[in-house]
Amino acid sequence: MNVIVSNKADEILSSLNIDVIKKVQGEFSAEEIVSMFENFFYEKLILDITAIKDYSELKNIQNLSINLDANKLIILLDGTSITSSSEYISGLISMGIYNFTKNRDGIMYLISHPNSYKDVASLQSLDDKPDTIIRSDNVGSRVIGFRNLTEHAGSTTLIYMIMKRLEKNYKVSAIEVDKNDFIFFNDKKMISCSSDDLGKELLRLSSDTDIVLIDLNNSNQNRACNEVIYLIEPSIIKVNKLVVKNREILKTLDGKKVILNKCLLTPKDISEFEMEAGIKTFYAIPPVNDRIPNIAIDNFLIRMGFLKQKDDMNTPSNQGGLFGIFKH
Image 1 (spheres, helix red, strand yellow):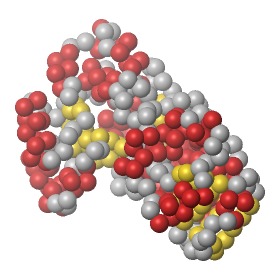
Image 2 (cartoon, helix red, strand yellow; image 1 turned 135 degrees about the vertical axis):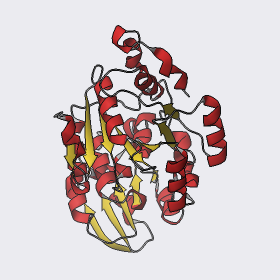
Image 3 (tube, rainbow, N blue to C red; image 1 turned 180 degrees about the vertical axis):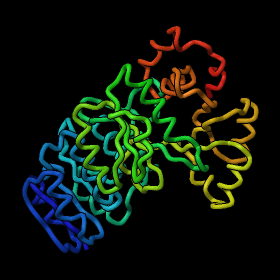
């Protein structure tokens, strides 16, 4: 059974030949829609975009993607220049919302043939370009998640070092989920919260923060992020332990951003690792001193699209380019 939330497109949605368990009509805030359906069982939630107050602000859509199952959402766009723009479509895809259309036939198709990321990847014109930050003024914060794959791969400390480098050029905050390790850094911009409160923290930060870094730990909050970085410490024992726990884990990383952290492998070693693992790594970061600026971190951030970091690379405190050879 399906749920319909309609407003200006009520005539179109009323003509759908589907089983409907509940239908509401009107204009609602994202919070109101979440409260109506977060504990409600349904197969698909078909949502008229005009039923969301201030739907031109993608941060309101992000609230839905965090608190509702994005795989069950089908959004009927209104065909305006705002919702038809590449920035808006890219924003939806970055949130994990892949099922959107502009007409009745599209809704009927998506109910039985839901999109995967591969079906909409060509529409995400801003994604994964090293010379572009995946953010525009109406998208809100760029939310980057970090997840350790091997034990103690260093996500917490890496996030701290990245934040300290980025804050020279951007407004940046960090959140750790379901842990309290950030307290040891003694930095007010590093927040600890539960999985349940993550959405609220992101909404609070979205109005005045350019970048939010999330230490995901063991939570299942990937969909709260525009992108997720997976960390592997590529020592033999760490990688073998990872594979013993889950022999299929490396196969799931195809097409994802995999970082070799605390990596002492040579470029040749890295190529052999990629061949054996069947994955392509995005970057390799060597062990670094977390007390001083380091060119390896800035190189990584430039690769991620934060081009303002280029201006800092030639400062005296950031010299010593030995680690620059690890740019991958």
